[in-house]
Length: 388
Figure 1 (tube, rainbow, N blue to C red):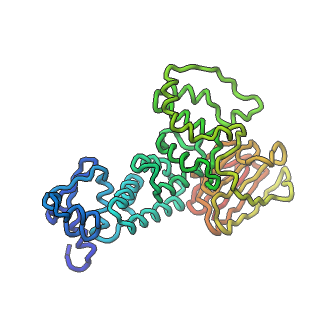
Figure 2: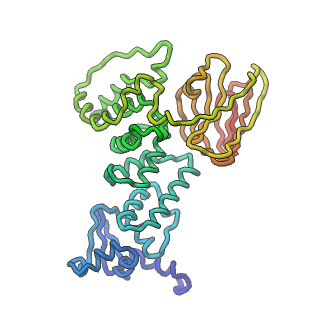
Figure 3: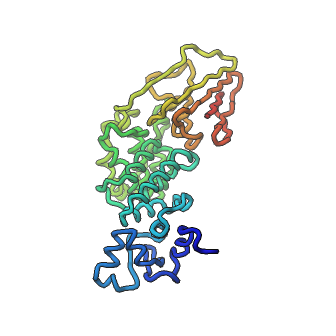
């Protein structure tokens, strides 16, 4: 490649290149990278203090960072050498390490870029919401007492996902502790999960850390809300498992973060009291036969919005439609819900100006749900939602 035409391309040749480096960088995962002292020091005050402090580090050819992973350090090298990083360089496997490293080396512009990239991913890519995994990973990196902007964003992103839709194993017990701590007794924070389900999820997650037998037993013993609400609830047999004391010990850090007073009302959520709802309902009952269609336009996106239909009989207007057998709801964060069964990543997220066309065919048992943005075709009972 001819040199001299692009400074960025020429500097790219120096990144992690032993030929042009004068220091070895040893990382947390024991991998070795290469760097140039002068460039690193010029771009980061942290590197400058470490490499030109007049102490022994100034003369050694190796420097060790026990808390910086090599995947994060590679992002740091790319940024310090070229002044930018490619969007495709940030992936779910390295975004936490990259943000942590940018914070460690005091590179605020890089932190801002990582934050914007992650926000755009949340808004545009509803097919793969990996916020629970990222929150779990970040929870292992930073103390809970720190006010971290990425941690706050991840907590907000996970808080609006019903916990019963997050498979066990995606959110660690430390990640759950961070989530509950950051939302505990904070009425202004949106939170999608009733407190009973918080208790259930935390207990089963604690059991999973201890013994598979305990995990399976509690999955059977602790009913989900929909089972409890049934006219003829499922009858369960009480079982004692030998590891119950270990499960209680594992659950201990979470107990003080669960508001047991709210569990009396099975529908009570932390942070829900400050929600402001603006409901728009049809003024006519649709007939048993025929095809009906109408548009719903989201002029300005908000924390949570939902569009749905319900039956005229056996429907309780005082409770959430998505938890009822006769209500079908499409949510602004991409889920579809009926009878408390949430399907994540069902459609694109709502945004400013989103138009939802509801096509209700009363002549058919099944109808088609089309997401215009991603060309995804899915089925829902008697309803088509077209999102533009």
